[in-house]
Length: 126
Picture 1 (tube, rainbow, N blue to C red):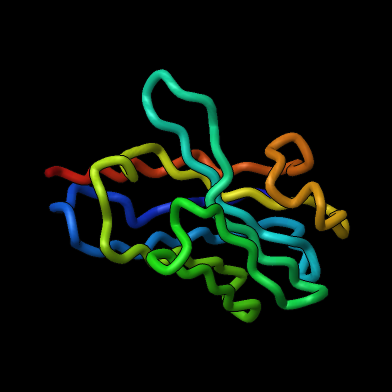
Picture 2 (picture 1 turned 90 degrees about the vertical axis):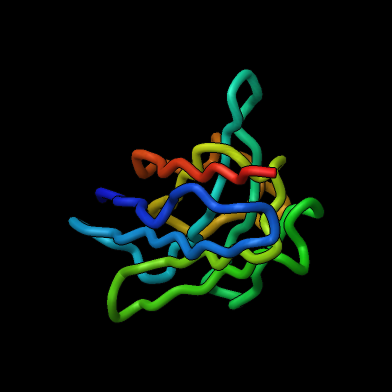
């Protein structure tokens, strides 16, 4: 499975961006999809994940109400809509998936995902 993330850029605080993550190769339509981010000097952190089996989406508290994750199975693409962006949202954003179902309690853990995109830079200026 190959994941290609895109859509990052430079935006002013309060602005919006939409990231895309296209999956190719062997894709897993029932696999969870997630977004993580990593700011300079910080550890990779969970942003949001979509559990396809339950159709539930799980958000980090820091992005609830501002970010929205969606998925288009026909296009093998996941999206991350980001509104009301803040300077602290500045990071490289990575999409991830895995080859099987996931235990919900671990959905925010990076180590449970097998496949990662290359990342796309999001910079929010104040």
